[in-house]
Image 1 (cartoon, rainbow, N blue to C red):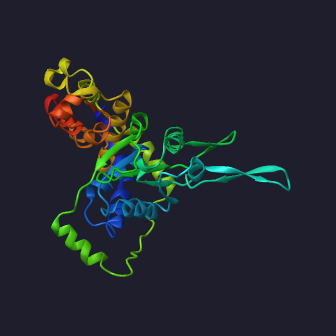
Image 2 (cartoon, rainbow, N blue to C red):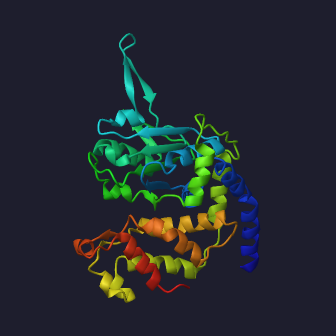
Image 3 (cartoon, rainbow, N blue to C red):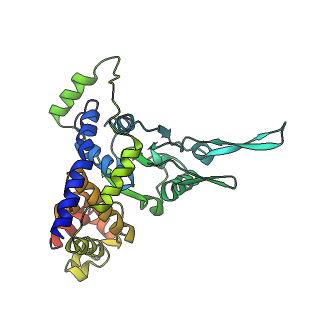
Length: 330
């Protein structure tokens, strides 16, 4: 087994060499936001979508656009608005009266990297159309189903401060996002660097292509090979089950604060994302710290707090932190 782990470790070190080059290229444009950039790479390598919450001006759009340039991938930015229609997203059938036939006009969803900006401003029909694309990696126009390109990554953004005219995202859709990340303002030193780099009328900074889509698909196969010990698998299960049955793990006071615990999708995503996180670190095996580092991003949107929790000013974030503090680390 040790020989096997050593071989995987060497393979991961070799296959993950492009990570540093990719991060360096992105940091030409993005100052700070290491947390966001790292989670974008986890989503890309783990084949999962990302929901980002943060106030305007924190480089969310710029980050995902820069990633697509460094990948040489097709990028589409979709501004979600209350009058958006599913056809605006996935495409539609156009009738040709001369020939009496329909032709398919594909929508902007047919790209590798999608930025769904202010996703909670679009109505339910648009959310449903996006849901099929995210989950099934395909789109149905008329009676024909079209597969989407691979890799396919959706990064959706939510503005936490302006809720007028928004539609709450259905729980089923929120659960489809592998990661939900919250980003905050940069440190004063970082903002000083931003000021110096971006305070020009022409802000274009050239980004070189570091890897191609095929390299990402190959890297994902290596991510699947990253070794995870049975003890760490049990650790992941304990974390997820503690969100459903806290009394079983001696955290009785959480029972009245959790309305719904994390779904089985949380166990799957936490496993895959931990492997991707280890891959980014150049390791061929997962450590408990990998699980603890990426775990809050997997769980914060999957645990639904009760009214009692709201009354006590306890958020799902607080509940997740408590679970990680209480569950024994292998």
